[in-house]
Length: 168
Image 1 (cartoon, one colour):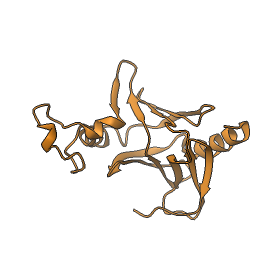
Image 2 (cartoon, helix red, strand yellow):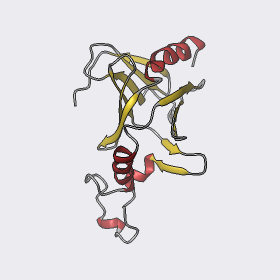
Image 3 (cartoon, helix red, strand yellow):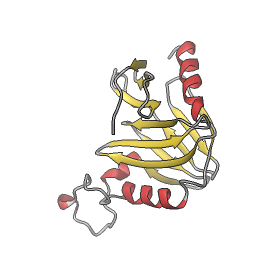
């Protein structure tokens, strides 16, 4: 990734520094984070790549937990991860959204030379989002929810700006 690309990503993603009303969920294997920026706009981060939420002491949840049943007693051959509320990730999101959503703020954001993203929240939780491919496949996307602005799309090859708006 070039310095120019890194600066573009940093400039764009810094719009959510100080963001509040943070909600986390998923649609199939796409994980989304919705938040209210200090400018009053609604922003979204979509991830289709490896990520993890951690606190100071432990890993709290990862991308792979979407595929883990809530109960270890569940037979994995009969486990349907895509049923809402059926997996560890969905349970964690429900708990996060109920207990933390309105009480936390995005404190800082970092981008490394590979396009990996680190978001630090005010409650000592950190989100690490990793570029996990060398192809042009999309890893993560940042955009104004229902906005007309171009989407910032990060792939294994760098930035791709797309004008297709996601409507949920």
